[in-house]
Image (cartoon, rainbow, N blue to C red; front, side, top):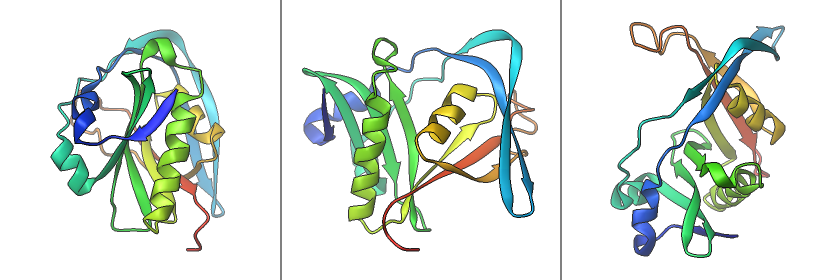
Length: 177
């Protein structure tokens, strides 16, 4: 597997399709005495969800940040898109791995390379947002060194996704705050 920054030559690889993933529970979090705690709440049924496909523009991504692709020979099977942010954390806007290549360490390697690039750009680390009902994603971030740093239960009010919440996850690099 090869991991590399996506250049104009690979710009069509930015639009690898989104594929289904399982929703099987929620991450329930609390903030008490300055500490985040969490627990898992499993659902009675498993539901498949697929995010709509994006139409990423290489030129826009280049202005806002960078993208990293994971390649099996010449096929892009994983993608991470990072954006500059006003604070000292680079924003992980999108992370996806093709279904047949999940659970092989590809997402972890995309994160490692993205964190390294963010540190080279003098960021303290990276952050991302996960929906509380995507327990797999939440557990993935926690298992890969991210810490909970915030919670927003209002983003989905008055939408078809009402009842969901956003959890903010932060991964520190090796630059002092």
